[in-house]
Image 1 (cartoon, one colour):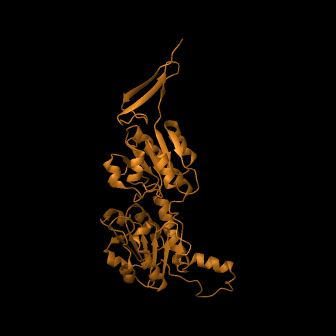
Image 2 (cartoon, helix red, strand yellow):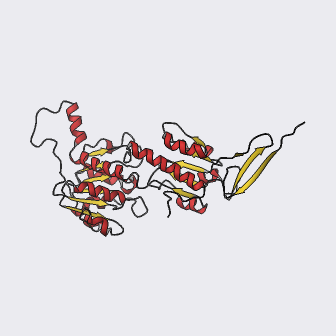
Image 3 (cartoon, rainbow, N blue to C red):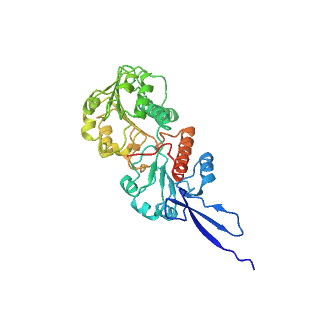
Length: 359
């Protein structure tokens, strides 16, 4: 009688989830079945677009969470076990507990975001796991949103829209629903990286008097394009009519905008944050808005997210709150997911990733 035999063979420089040695891949075959290469496994924490999913399915065994809300913690801990790659979002906290459950097979964590404060970087690096992110792709979309949020706040667009719906619009009135304009103003940009520079370029078209920025390093050549000038943080606070925040969340920028900072700002100042909620001491901002220490605020990011419905920020007329939609442009989100997929495939093949996060 013909007897079946099953073999496991390790091949250098490839990778498979069966083998715990990252330097090898595994072929599994039977004497009666054609040889089949074992595909690496990927776990995706949210539903993504077909184009990105097709890239992954071609090379990997894909498992994903398809619920409307972020993947539950227990689900993530269960499904990440023995996976070779993790495709995650900024809503997913990837810490030592997740890494422990993943085990030694995990090679690459690809986050569909430019920010990475949800990743426990030192733990990931300690385990020699690669990290990728999605810079550049969302720069234009986020800059567009920052400008839109600034204009919505300063020109009281949501407040005016609500007044029209409620029948409060009786007739044209010379000073009803007026707000500060950008022309001849001083615009301050906190964080003059890719997004900060694109915000400045767009605001330049509104003919402000000055554009100033605060950044760890001076961006001489980049600043020339919009006649921007580097200043100290205190100078930016005291001189700016509009302040747009686009810096990363780090230990240095945590609660950068606190009670002392808001007190230094003009009472007519408009404050806009599209970076991370942790950059702002939220209680201090609420007090500044309630007491008219500053004129108004536009927020795309908060702490926590989503805001509880009883949070004072949602009740203030001089505060516009958006649900973290900075990069919510259809093409942008699709391209972010595609880039994540390409990063994962490159990492699993041992090739250079299009956008590896190196810290």
